[in-house]
Length: 315
Ligand SMILES: [Zn+2]
Image 1 (cartoon, rainbow, N blue to C red):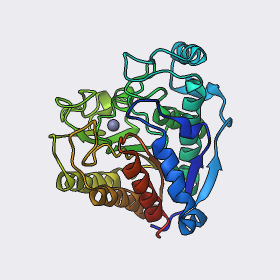
Image 2: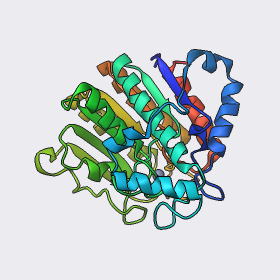
Image 3: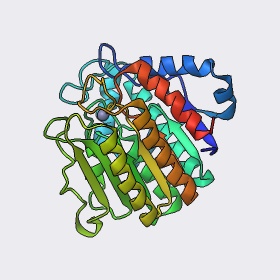
Image 4: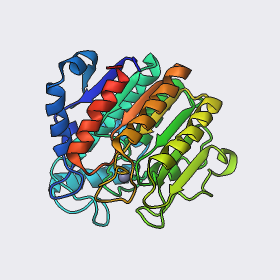
């Protein structure tokens, strides 16, 4: 693609994961190991360290202060659950989640201002709502980064949120359902077969935002053919909308073999989808924030992240 590409890093950032849990920090460790051995890629990327950079005040632009306070308390205590049992608490989960939000906030600003690619592998926590966490997602880095960008550059900014994670991005969808400046195109496994159960064809936005959202629920066992044919529709829509910036939740839990879902994308199919989304950003000369999202085969996910970055810098 040959676009300027910045990777967000940090010790705390790469702690976003849980012990004895499908969302493991192994994927970041494996990725860093592979990157260390890829001199050409390493020298083509910019690195940006986020640990300790953001104040928790940014969270208030999206989340309720009550919820922020609750996570902080649980984080100090170090045990229990954020939600009803999918998202366990560990000591310091507040700071780790804040680092994840921080990387997306800086990343979206960079992507927007420099018409470049920003990459936050430990971001894309699309199930978190304004007042509660859910499905491994503590804070919604997508929502916070949209709100921070708006607070700096105005409410007229047009965002295009693309989500190819196998799960529906309910926390983003319902937070922006009636917001006409946040376009959404979300391809996922049909909610009748997979958490969180939402994201049907009829969910197209509400009020004056009707028609700005598209939900594509795929039957279990869908593969590359379905993914790439809907990517065609997506690309067409992005050109039509001509947004100011793209947020891309590119979770890899739709890849064949994932232990949590029933989709069957191949590595090549996934990478082709990513390449086409990067391509539309390049053609429109706008920036894009790539977020790691889900994906529960740590080695495969790490290997594909290397390939995604190589596509971004045209190696
Ligand atoms: Zn997912």
